[in-house]
Length: 628
Image 1: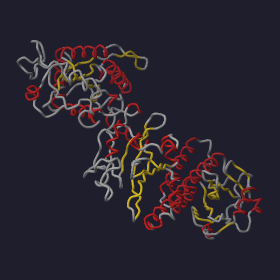
Image 2: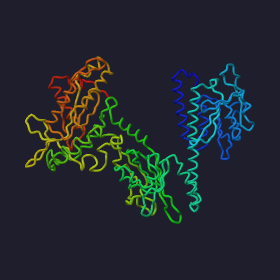
Image 3: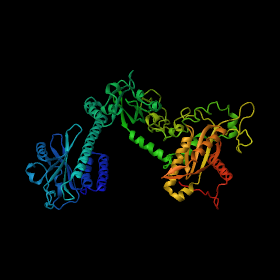
Image 4: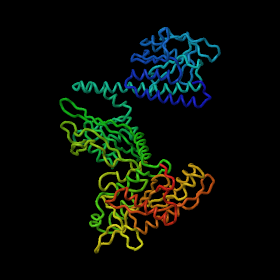
């Protein structure tokens, strides 16, 4: 602790503090929280002993928790447990001590200030040699206050393991720890109050009027949002009461919220989920609007407060802030579906996007039922070059919830009047609840919900466009004969393999190779159309998905991609150049994903062979580098 000039020691201390603070918040009871405080002071801050004196309802302080690194033969500070000191004596002691920020240090030569009723234990440590050595009779106190400024208790620490009086870094660490301990103790007390209030509501339903004050305090001072909703009459669904935490969460004054309902605040994409939420024990993760125009991710938990004689009285909704958790989930989902080096969609995401676009219906059946050309719905319209394939439109999957199937007995309907059905409430994932781009979260278009919400409306079949000329691709795909025009546009798959990349790796190293891949990814992304997908399949292989495109347009796109890649690039002050071999394949319903990619891959190798490039090794393996 005291080698304060060494940054790694401070970092280790911060890590330890982070762990012990997490232990504080993990405690389930007030007693567990107090024990976590003294153990954290000993194991995390470098002291041999610690004790917490907690303020009782009558104002006096009682020793509620102690901890010692090694139990001494004399019994140690554990003998103090349960002893009581008057508030007046404690205030006097804190007043005459030296002020070290929020800490109070009582040197041994000021021991006269310790009143006889204050519990105290003096160990048998070594006597000081130098001025900054710790004396066995020295005392270091950390008063802990509530958010309102009321004294919650005092954390006392003794015998720093360095043998020295704490320096600036240790003092600051103890101040931070005592602040977190204050919050943890306050929350533990509040949780205990809420549990007692709920127990009284369950056991004393006839005494509901008598317990109103306890419930009011538990409601008003809850650390998370709480709301009461009307269940009957013309105001059904109206918020009749909200607490300060909910007002702060949504940035809206109490008077404004009491004129609204959750249906007025919910994100349009989450309205159906809210309406299906069961009133009794219903749970939903959705977005509520803030005053600044943005949306806040929350978890709603409903419970009905009922009177034994009159039945359900009102709906109590707990509103938990889950914004950070949602952000982390989306980040994890993005890392799972995107290449860590280039930031492009990876092979798994590429196959997922292809899979969302293809169905198992054979090409012949698709072509027989196809009704038009490029101007009809599906080709050149929504779903081609739209949100379904743009990287900005692909994030992680949406969020639903799970819960009971039925509502409260006698109230099978949801809060908003929609009949509850088995499986409603929160039966399985709810589609379409990813955050919208305006809120800073990408929504995966193909996962956005049922027909009409995924960028394609009803599924539009992918059909391989016709090849009219003698020099076209070998497989032109089926198309309708007769008066209807042949299919002109489809889903092109352009397979790109870099030429000369292995020599850059061998000559300049993998760091230079990685920089080349990043630059190639940037150039490819800049060359494609809005809505096209550029993915890294692995190693030096990239794939472009271009939907709603004709054969000539696909060739023009391949030409643009080639011209984007071949100009020299500057990497670490050196000029480097790579070439590219491109193969154009077409995806159609009835084809497997592997078949689509294999066809484009073979077209790419046809081009490589035509240009006289090295294609296969001695054992049929590709000669270029393949990285994961």
